[in-house]
Length: 295
Ligand SMILES: C[S@@+](CC[C@H](N)C(=O)[O-])C[C@H]1O[C@@H](n2cnc3c(N)ncnc32)[C@H](O)[C@@H]1O
Image (cartoon, rainbow, N blue to C red; front, side, top):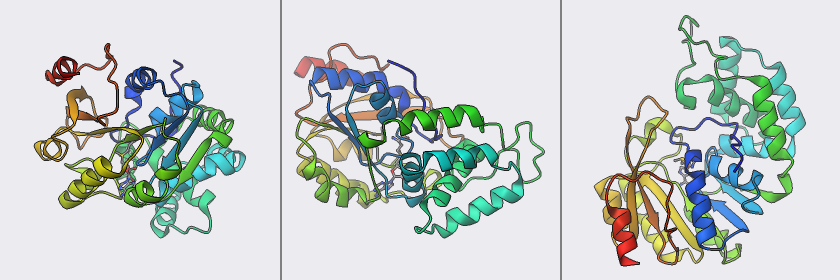
């Protein structure tokens, strides 16, 4: 599978899971629609679409800045690339982009999408509310343009734009999306849910959940989603409790955000999913063995 990279940096980005998701798609004979209700940087979705493992991807994110970025990629790729090419790499420009993101004016999604992207590439760990790489005095070893390789980013955006008719974006709350959007998706599809982490999410994303939200969404996912679904989270006991009746395994993923230490993540499976016999993930407990013994 080609190693296509999403243009967005994402704390907790899951692109490294792509080979595993392909194994799930193949084991379940799914090659049509793939859906991410919490899309963020959508690294897995983009890799699956561009390597033609699926025909259509559906990306939803409740955060308007991320939606605006995907909107700009699909609807105004040339203007977006022009803005990237001519973007000024100064703290003054960074402050301007910060203000636009804060105001979040929906009437100019191209400008909002570009500004979100600018902060994503120029801020520490790609976190929208973090500081600029190199600091306001630009005195650090790395400067704000350290992750702003214009040609590479433009190439990535142009590659995605070629598939624009196959990319379906929305800006809904995930619960609303489950109730109102997913019922129109074909049954033989794969839904990958990657909600904000249970721990520390509020420092990483502009939209995150409180404890009771995790329980409520957990009930909804398990009760209301009719298609095949898989779910990833940080592997904390509270989450294991919410999904205690589902098959799961814990694995290790090295986070890129400085605020989160290397830790265990959990993957949880809808009862209808066939789990591939050979699995490319390095799991850290024997949950996977249990899965194989039980199914
Ligand atoms: C863990 S990140 C997803 C990362 C993604 N899988 C990737 O690889 O880049 C969670 C995403 O969910 C979004 N989000 C948070 N609360 C949401 C909600 N209630 N409904 C939909 N999206 C939400 C956040 O804006 C964030 O982009």
